Image (cartoon, rainbow, N blue to C red; front, side, top):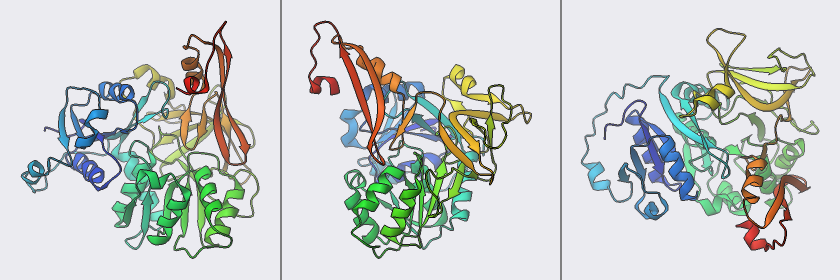
Amino acid sequence: LDVGPEVVVGLCAERSLEAIIGLLGILKAGGAYLPLDPSHPAERLASMLRQASVAVLVTQSHLEARLPEIQARRIDLDTDWAKIAACPKTRLDSGVTAEHLAYIIYTSGSTGQPKGVMHSHRGVVNYLSFLTRHYAITGADTILNITGLAFDPCVRDLFGPLAAGARVIIVPNEQAKEPGRYLSAIRERSVTKLLSITPSFLRGLCETVPAGPITSSLNTILTSGEPLEASVCEQVHKAFGPQVTVVNQYGPSECTMASTWFKADVQQEGRVPIGRPVPNVRVYVLGQHLEPLPIGVTGELYIAGAGVARGYINQPELSAERFIPSPFSSGERLYRTGDLARWRLNGQLEYIGRVDQQIKIRGFRIEPGEIEAALVKHPSIAQSVVVSREDCPGDRRLVAYWVAADGGVMTPVELKA
């Protein structure tokens, strides 16, 4: 289908063996994949497909009703096996280089206008090389995959283990969302490493474990997506045993998978640091005039090096705003994270918060203002405020407050819709 370097191929499939085959097929042809979550609204999927100029769509036949009408050639992974089997089996040179596009990930969760982040092979290979070496992933390891294809951590969950010859267990969607069933999968499959798990889900997982450590093959847990509290690390050791190493990773979607890491210590209190950069990545804590700030002073975090994405697809103005020329090295770009951080005396980075109103809940990046704007479009709502609340430690929730317009009446069902 003429797929090669810089050609974007849409992939809309449920988490399955077929989905992995689709991913590998796109990459072996030299193309870049755009993962599409079949549970997302058709309007959002259509916007992504248009913006990325997708000409070929790889999917499953039973998902056809959920997909928008687009002018693209289609391959159904479940019904086109006869056609696929008739293709040549010889290995072709795709012509791909480190600078070519590997995949596009759309940010902003399920709210607002999606932004497609363009990642090159250089950033992916740099991080996966660090991952497999630093955490000693080998053919003896078994790793669970619970992250949807449309999220950056899925690259870590799939290609990290596969690159090292490890075994990947594809957990069905419904099982991935329930701590009890997830825990059963760890026991039954003798899982050794969890590479992508949010601290809030990890806390729930630990609370599901009966009193005392369970017999477990687990030795490594990498968290990301939210701030990690030291109390969660303590829960991990009580639930799974002292042999488990917990690592706090930090990295926005605009910088491939993870930019910094920190091995957590049970003796710590409060929030766990985000640590130091991974190899070939540089981080800066800067002031308003891009001046480096001294130890202990809070500033905005900027990232440079191999992991920085190209920018947002077909959004040059937004790309220029967030990806800026570096004042420290000619030809280098910095990504403005919008996160506040400071250096500790021991040379580790500490995450402080956001420079704007953006929040993260269970790994989703959410702009409360976008949700407020959507709510006040309703004729019965005059004003709205959206905040995150944490009534129970580790259980952050999104809460909307509203003021009725004159004579306006809203039921909870209408408001939620």
